[in-house]
Image (cartoon, rainbow, N blue to C red; front, side, top):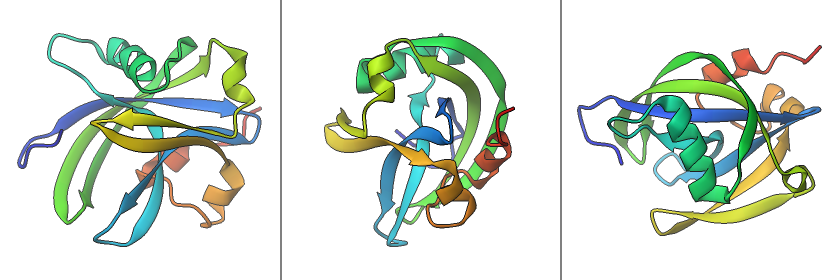
Length: 146
């Protein structure tokens, strides 16, 4: 939940499978624009960003994470639904513990009593501009894997 004038700390998980990443789909009705973002969510008071990442994946898609590695912090100043927002994103690279998640095309989960869709998308569709990933600086972490 965003409060006007406050900086929100969130933890997001970058999960890759070959040339795809796992993201949630969002829509800004003011901009009339669809966007995609890595899964995760807010860090609660007294909780580390790593704990928040693990809790959010468990709450949202009932998934456990393995091979978790901290990548860095992204500062994101944005507008959503006509309201200004400011986030500090603690970004982690990780994998699903259960291989079934890599076989899914998409899944639906509830967040704040609203349905959301999570799916695998091809990184090339982001690079080409076909799909919009937020924040844009997230692209810096999507270099081709060696």
